[in-house]
Length: 385
Image 1 (spheres, rainbow, N blue to C red):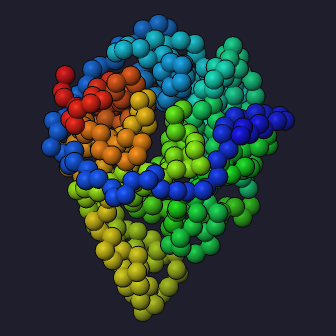
Image 2: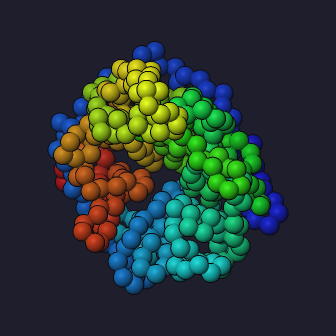
Image 3: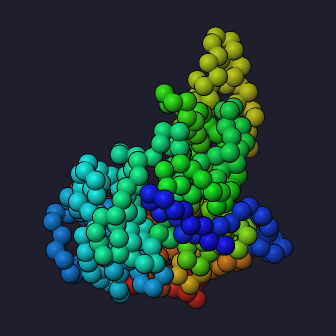
């Protein structure tokens, strides 16, 4: 089923999926290998060709991975659409200049390209979604209404969607995270998918809108895949939800666990106590309550903090803090079986999948480089080139 939003702006063209969560059929999760045993891969530096960029690269985004591997490049003063082929990126047309005017962007928080070549971006500083036609001409923009502002926004498949929650009136209460489309006026609209959530605190703006801040252990991880639809995970679990076919759940497995940083954990407890507004003895009681009820037995969790749906159907998940001197990644297939491991330096941030690998952005002092890391499809360990 496809959802069309009509009116002043059109931002959604997606399969509509509701939460009818079911297990993938795996009887027991397999043991995931410890990725920290794999050598760190520096990858291959990606060459830039085509239109010359002014200044250095500030950021990179996945535009599309359907027909070809498309990359959004944010350079000094402008944003460009580019194509990744092998170990080179060809810079194509300029999407927009940086600035506050219509058709410009002050910040690029989400960026995606539709099948027809149109580009949609979310600018958090301006609270605005902008769209450019396949020809490259600016089409329209929508300023999001205060009452529609959500916890966050993600992009994929030619769409910017809101990550919000069903409810959240009590700090640390369980809730239901939601992915919702936006209507032509910028309000949250149709429900696309759901996932388990938890509230850290509520922040209210002058219009009375609710903004939910989640604790470290329940941060949603949302990525778009042309094979799986919306891929939803949470930092506290290796359960991964695939949204294309009735939101099927994949249990990724068991394995080595990484502890939550005690400082981060204690900060979360303090945040809870502050939100209760308790004073004196009641404050100490609130802290004891939070420690015993919210964090007991939760100092060693199966934490992940990134996920990349690979082009061959596998999923790569980054194990948060498991390897102290580098990032460790496990790969699983679409039913949760182990499908390889690799590690990369700590300054690598994933951008998007590529043919037989993953494109990373590598921060080096003031500059940002793009690096292609090979991910062997059949081996348990990706080898350093």
